[in-house]
Amino acid sequence: MARKENGRAEYNKPDDGYLSPTNLPSYSKLHTENRWDEYNKPNDATSDGYLSAKNLPSYSELYTENRGPEQYLDETCLWAYDNFAKYFVHKNVLPSNRELHTACRHLGRRSATFSNICRMICKQVVGTAEDIADVWASYRMEDCHLDGTISIVFVVMTTTDTPRNIHLKDYKYHLVSQNTFSNESEIVRARELSDETHAISTKHNTLEELRKCIAHHADDLLERHSNINVIVPSLKKSKGYYSDNHSIIDEPCIALYVPLKGCIPIHEDPFPQELDGYKVDVLEGKFETYEGGPNEFHEHLKMGLAIHAKILDSNKHLLGGTLGGFVNHPVYKMCGITCAHVLCSSEEMNFIKYCGIKDGLDKPVFQPVNDESAPFGRVVMAVYKSGDESSSGMEAALFRIEERHPEDGSFPIAFNDIQAGFDENRPLTYNSGVVCEASSISPRTEVFKYGMTTGITRGSFALQGAVVRKERNEGNRHSFGYSLKDQLVVLQIGMEPFAEPGHSGALVLIEGDHHDSVAIGIVEGGIKGRVFVTPICDILRAFGCSDLEMYKFNNSNNGSLSTDSGVDVDDSEAMDVNN
Image (cartoon, rainbow, N blue to C red; front, side, top):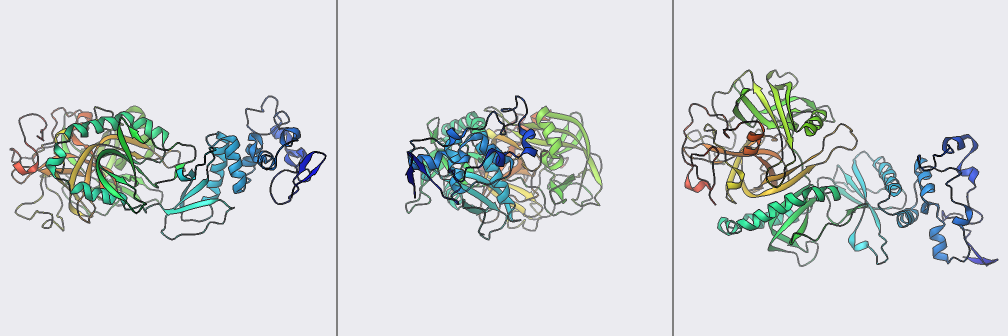
């Protein structure tokens, strides 16, 4: 209880963590003689950010007369003062939950000092268990109060699905597996697949406006909101998923994918409600690239084989990807293409990102993915572009074939070729080298690809205009983070995923004439139910292949595509698709 003595309220609670006449720390406790010189450097009160005789608040500032009990308890908490808070962070002293919220109110949730407080707490939470992958401070819109105060929640991402209790102070936690997401996006995907091609084609102008809107706002959105993984245009919007009245409505919108819906990073603002008149929808998902996967040796190279360049993951395992396709380069002659992240290390990728395009990498490429495999070629060029409103982003590598040259445009034998619509009389092939401009593909055109783990998989082309972001690993200063604009979206058909780990760089095709195929792009990565594809024509242009075609094999049968493929071929360099 508080009592009045000489006009001053006295709060003598030994365990409440707040100041009182009997528990105010002396300066000698805050700064012992042995450590005073470390902080009391001439003119460094603001440069080093720690306490000194010049910037310590006085007792009169900490403890004044005529204050009400609530104001007293709040403002006399040491964590309300920037310099004391900096000192405690330096000493790795954790605040209580009450002190944390006091610091937030007084220092501001966007301040550097409060960010350091949250970072210190997150680091200690990560250290409480081996299966904690990430921790970040957040707040929820429903917990925002009229006076501007918020309720802080620490989001704990785990590598396992087993919930645990965290016994670190009295903070509020939200525990979730890093690979567990709500089913909301899957419901949206099912409704998207139910749309007829004709119904989507009539909305061509709307889809183009959505694509341009995303490209225009993507940089600002990614800069302001660190939790965005993917931005995609959509003709379906989810409403009230966590209520009893959940519905999917026909409304053009911009969908933002985040790892956890409802929790806003502490230093950021909520997402905008709309962009250029289009509503914003928020769904759960995480963008991943597709490194890794099994493979076997082939005497003659084929599209779809697993390849590597001796890049290791954090567990010292070889990272591999897929040989996408072959090109006849004007300088390097027969070459292969794949994603740059398959063949380039993070350090190399950062350099490529800085340069835009890099020649002369001259590093060996191996097949299959094991420590004993021998090189068959060398990386000669790599490119990175984030993209803009008029061109697609990409990160791709070109490697010269020096040994084990391919004999034809065939793929390895697939265990599920019959189920996928192919057989020995009509195998999956790509001999023609014909490519297709992304802007010419009709919505709901069926696409397919080969993967070493999945065999032949089929998907449905949805839309163009997605933005994807791969976050850098904060624990590795050399790790590579990037974003790519104007990617193609392929929806999973049925229960089997369209792409899996090991499929980065895989060539994505549509049906052509004479039992042959037409290339539209290479697999970049994906989230559950959706795979993002970089348009092949943009990659060829970046590599200087002005004729816009892949490698033509001698047994190719050229001609127009069948009328049910969703495309028509003319005599232009790249095939156009009539909507």
